[in-house]
Length: 272
Length: 310
Picture (tube, rainbow over the protein chains, first blue to last red):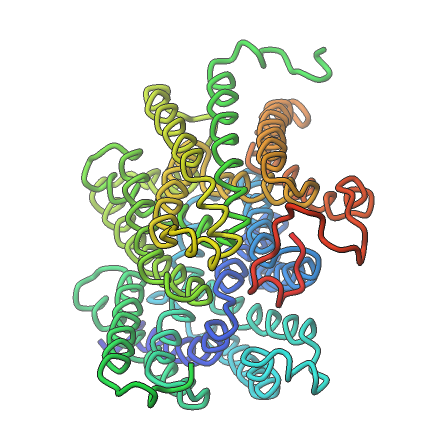
């Protein structure tokens, strides 16, 4: 389980879990689950396009996820955020379908981009994942105060001179950065699941942002490690176990939150 | 005529089926879509295509008909989203995400088992990217019946649905159970999305659900007009897309043409962008800074914080 190709999977899985745990906390806090789904999925069009004109797919992924982030951010100013996200996503998917229709390679590529090939990661891919993951976490650390304030108390944030539009944009770009590099490694579906399940579960256990982020990272790590081990044991796809464990954490979190609500005496509940 | 319509356009069987089924799903999507946009449930509307796909791949594994899998997947997923996230509007986003994550995980497993057991890898492609030109004619009657049922259902619940979407307090005061209405709407949404994702593919399903409805809601403030405009735009877009895709084969003889989904989505997207331009805003008689006209649908509270007009 800890030899050969599995070593790379453990390493890259650990990096991805840490990044997803940190960035995912803000995805859940800000209600940005849809952009978190749309950006990595839409970015696959970039990989298809890059493949068509013969350049590195990673460049295509990067360009398209950045375009998706900027498009969602800027169009949201004039329209409903969820509508804009949906339309940007389908536009990029349709572009991807058009690119694919012009090339001869079809299915294995789609499959690997959607579901990832974490078990087939070469060691040369670990370095870029680590670097961009680090960049995302540093960016979150720099933006931390304004992200928290803007998400929890938008009025106070505006009064202190934090511009909501710029904060939105900055966060979407961080999201694009965190997802791009992980998509070809673990797949668009897996990264999304990791960004929602563990952080949403962690928020059920505590209301304090710092502790919730730590909890979210721990749960994401447990999810990935358990998924890799189970996948190795049962020979089923990693993505299935990640989805199952993430949903299970969230279920436990909701049960805990419900139990705390009903067992605590009235009036001593935590601030909602 | 041949400049506009390539030879064989009107006599081709697949094209005719595509035009009829495409128009039908466009109408159902547009009607359900107007409520989806008003209720800010675009994410759920999109996520249900993936959840329905999970049902489809599961049905493939069990040897059941894909259509029943798509519908069952959508209904179970939609029900789960509504049950998890019913308490607060903000947690709906997370609930949708959790269900989507779990469903895609199952998709990964089902598709893996499909490919290892049947050895034909074409299954993945067919399930993920259904095409309007490859509709199985034998499923047409079922699609028509379910579409009619969905439209009827929306017609029955449209008043409490709208009231519940616009003002929860007012609806509760009149004795409307928001939970029941929400669940019923989710059921209609799940069936509509399940049908459209098997008939026209998941990309087009979301595009036709959200695009025409959002465009219509931007250029008119009356709900009835919005539904009519959305249906018109949806059908027009679908037919234009089919025509362009059919013609595109002849544009460059060396290639195989561009997919129909590309054209339809491009038109939908451009129409939405155009409806935000100044002249379209004038068309709707909306003055900048003016007070809201009577009978207008006010934005939900969580959207107001985004500074959003529809």
